[in-house]
Image (cartoon, rainbow, N blue to C red; front, side, top):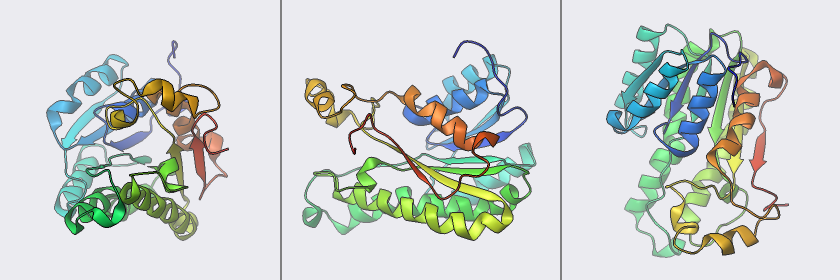
Length: 253
């Protein structure tokens, strides 16, 4: 991206897990196209560079610390959105966790709950709380960040796969329920992407092997997800809802 665009001019977007990786790339892509931003993460200081980058693009950006699995934090976050911006047009549910890698039946109930609390309950809480703001928008769009792990079982990632499969189904359910309110709901499902979150799968000499399993011959980059997110956030996808769009270099083909 070299020239500033305007596909999201005067829109307001709330993006969770925005401090790095895919969330950061989408946030700056939206700012580049004219959106003002509310950026959420557990630690506010982690968002400061993203806020600065968005402001250098001429956009307003607000950083809010929030635990997205906490109903109280979600309520406070949405209250800040209403107080500071008075509207919301785009919600990107990107925050996620994967605290456990291993066989499903060897996981503890605590780690199971922790994963689903953020990856599945968190988006539910945020959509539920932001619904009134979104229904006021003339072009409301919810974008859930799923995963190809939610499309087929991923070895050693059983709980994470379950949480993302649930998020994909939530997308379909809410697309139907919220369509009468003109709120579109879709999912982006990235494959293996070069982020700190997924580094256990590709770092320390494992990248060549990982890339060999992808038909396009490389793992994804956070920027690979931006144009698809812009499509779903903008009027270009005005007749698209309830869809899971896969970006994986052909790995699930």
